[in-house]
Length: 610
Image (tube, rainbow, N blue to C red; front, side, top):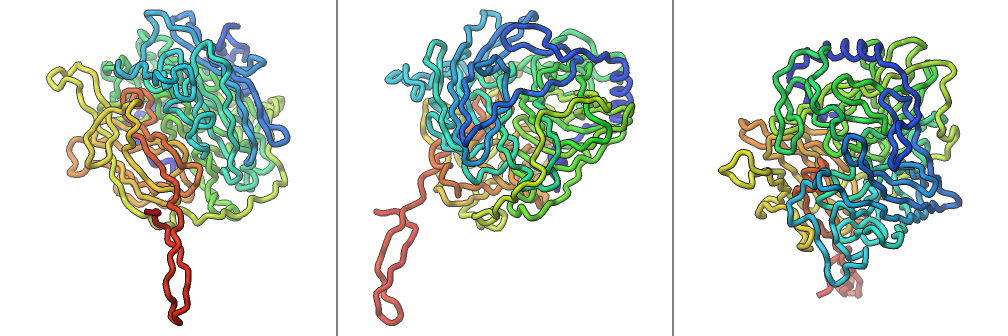
C-alpha cells in the first residue's frame, strides 16, 4: 500500500467533479496580488492572493549553524493571535539548513506577551495550564511551566537525545524576561537527509501557538546523495499551516454545491459533514499566504514551463489533514514521491532509486512529503489543491479547496536553492533494515474519548491514548511515571487501535517507525515515518480499526524520557499523550563456561548486572 492510500476518502466522491470545475472557475477570477506583506507588524502576513514567498535560509557554515531566534506574538486586526519565530534580522520562521554531523546552536529568546482576557484560551484541562517544579522554577531546564506565554522548541523527526538543551519538552520551558536559552545539539552523522521541522511544544498551549504560525522547516541536506533522481533540481519549501477562520460567519460560496447545514463541535469548529464542502474547521495558508473561506482566493506559485522541481511540503497545521493534488486543466498529475517524514524512499538501500508515482499525497498534521513536480505549459491552467478528508463523525470538516495557482512563464524567477548536480552517494546503512529485524515483543495501545460528564452530551471531551491493560487517563505532565519502558537496542511491534469516532494521527518523538499493517491490510513500504493516521471506528464493526508499527529503539539517542501522542494538537493538549522511557542497553555480563575441550571460554550475555 502506498503512502497516498492511508486516509479516508470523501463519502460523496461524485462531488469531486464539481470541485474540479469549481476551483478552476474561481482561480480564473482571482487576482494575483503582490508578495509584499499586508502589514509591517510583528509576525507579518502576506495578503491573500499573493505570490508564494520562499522562506529565508539559515545555512550551516564549516560544520556549524549558530543563530538567534525570538518567539513573538501579537493580535491582528480581527482579534486573532499570531505567533512566530524570527531571527536576528527579523526574518520570520527561517529554514534551518544543516548537514549530517553539523553542530546546531540556537539562542532562543521569549518575547511573548500576555494575551488579552478575550484572547483564545488553551484547550488543556485547567489543571494543566501551569505546572511548575517549585524547587527550580527559575531554571528553564526544570521549570515545567506550561502557560500561554511559555515557549520552547521541539525538533520534530530529528533523532537527538530528549534532554535539556537538545529536545526535551517535558520540563524545558522559557519564560518572558528569561535570558536567551541555548539549544546545542549535533545532527547525527547518519540522520536521513530530508525535511524536518521545529515548533513549540508547551503542553496545553501547543495548539494555540502552532495554529498562530509558530513553526519552521529544518532541512538536513544531501537528499540528492540518496535519490539521484533529484540531483541538480531546483527545490521549493512549502509550509502549509492552518489558522482560525478569517470569515467565520460567512455562508459557503454560492458556487459550491448545496450541503447540509454545518454543525459546530465542542471546540467551536465546523464538524465533518461528510460532503467535502461547506464551512471548514480552519482556514489554510501556504508560506503564510492565507487562503480564506469561503472563496479560497489561491496564492500563486511561479515556475518555468515544463520545469522539474523538488517540492518539500510540510503540513504544519494544528488540526487539519491534507490530501494534496496538482491539477492541470482538472486532471491530476503524477507526483514522484522522493521522501516521507524526512526519510528518502528506499533509504535502506541508496543504490536503488525507486520511482514511486502518486496522484495524491495524504499528510496528517505534522507529516512531510518531498516529491518531484513537472510544471505546466505556458498558459495551461494548473492548481495545487487539497481534497477533502473524511475525519469521521466526531472529526472536523476538512474540505476541498484551492491552495495555489501554478503559473508557468519563461521569466519566472529561479528558486533560491538548487541541489548538487553530481553528488557523492551516501554510504550504505550500518544497521539492518528494520523490516528485517525481529521484534522483542508486541504491545497494544488505543485512542479513545469520553465525555467529562456522561449525563451531559454538551460537556467537554476527554482524550486518551492508553496502553492496553492500563486505566485510561489524560496525560499528566507532573507524573514522571512512564506508561511504557523499553530498552535501547531493541525493536518492538505496536498495534494501535482507534476506539473513537474520529480520525487520529499517531506520532512519537526521537524516532521513526515502519508501517506494517493498515486497517487489517498488510503494507509493503520501503520507508519509515514518524506520523501515521489511525482510521476511526464506525460504531458497527466487530473489531476496532488499527495500524501495526515496527518501532525502532536501536539508536542510542533514543535513551531517556519522551512522549508519543496524537498530532491533532488540541487532542494532545487535552491529554491524548503518553510517556515512554527508553533505558540504556543492558551492560554485558561476563561469565566463564567450559568449552567442549574443557578449556575456559568467555561468553558475553546482554543481561543486567544483579
